[in-house]
Image 1 (cartoon, one colour):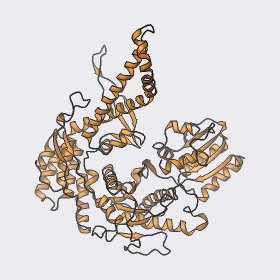
Image 2 (tube, rainbow, N blue to C red):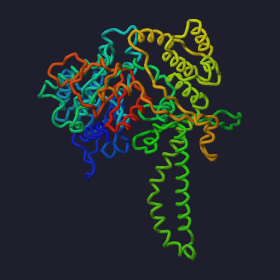
Image 3 (cartoon, rainbow, N blue to C red):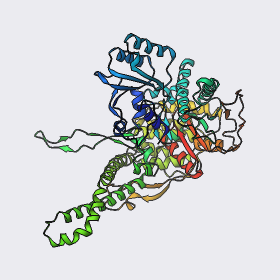
Image 4 (cartoon, rainbow, N blue to C red):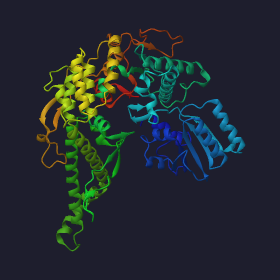
Length: 608
């Protein structure tokens, strides 16, 4: 279980460690959260798990709530002015029996005094049982991945950081927001990292501020958050982790790249947030007196969680493999289901039937085991249905937008391979892709071209893009970015491996398959390290490489920070956290996961 899930369970148990097998009823309580708190809890704890922890009701802080005077309330909110006002109002209205106030980030002294004054005014001082700073201002999506925020995420996005008209004050605020979340992460982890970052980038600003914040906390021995009973203490007891702060600008092609693995495709083409995918069920036609009319579209939500074994096994697999695996799971389920039905029908035969009596003794044991495995079977069926629906929705996008063609073509561009079709033909093909797909493809070509296309060629491409309905604003930005990046550094290398086609998929899938894969390419991924993974490898293994030789080195435990890029620690690292300032993506996440499997190290991977 992830340390943030452990921290949440402890918080919901009135900040006492939660013992899983403790007998007796839990204390029933109400959970009050804001949108930030809801986003942190929802990927980690299901409604059933909340109920097991005694949560009977979970309500938003700013919703209309009725008094429940004989029940304690656990609050989990950001310490904002608006939230504090509403909590003070709850105290005055005496909504609950007692109040356990938990703040996602550290609350300031002045706001704490506001709560104390409200409690005094409402004669509710004794009812405020505990006030805690939880330092949980980050969202854990996987055991080895977190993001900073879901609410207001555009405020710390790549666009926000790289806006040409950004003021110094706005930039400071963005950096402070990022640093606060990273600080919370390391407090929860109970470890002080060694920080490496590139020079002259937003990542360097984050590193300087985080180093200062960690240093100040360590210096204040009485209130240091890194001593004593921290949840993660001991997890990294033998060696400190490495924090690699990477700037998004080192590689803009990968986030634009069309992808071919399951999780990244779900994120790219479907509505996928906080591990929940929202699908619109395909609408058929409905007969009515007025003739046929389209049915209303049903919206369905599915949670893709670490508890889903199929998802855990296949989220990093190429899509054709996923489609095949769903089909195999379905066939094995049908075989088990038929066996249960057969045994049930035998048991249901009239008692006088000689055949039934003679078979009874043989089959009772079989039936008992079949029936006892029924809940497991039903759960298996639920997951098969879920992945059938999700994979079908993804497949629809692949086929209508020819995403397999885009993926293969972009791989060739990025690995400098020979192109079998001109870029102009790809852009001009009315049947291949949306305007956004075409723009993404062209930007990847533009970013990766050693020599920028001539003005005449560029005009031709621009015309084709505009005819295809593209907005040219991204191209104008990338032109400026490339001119600037050229002055700063050499172009990024993506290796020379490309996806290998194994012919068309219709031959791979059997005829009874759920998935009509006719015409979709069966592309096999070639393993290669993306720029972010290469940077991590250089820094973890202490390799000398022009790409990372001038990365700054910060050790918050050193008494005096000095501005050197020479590492004091000469041993290779065993644990690392990668953080991309300006936003990571599932392609890079999967690439890092694959790298870890090869190196057999303990991962913690993060993206903004």
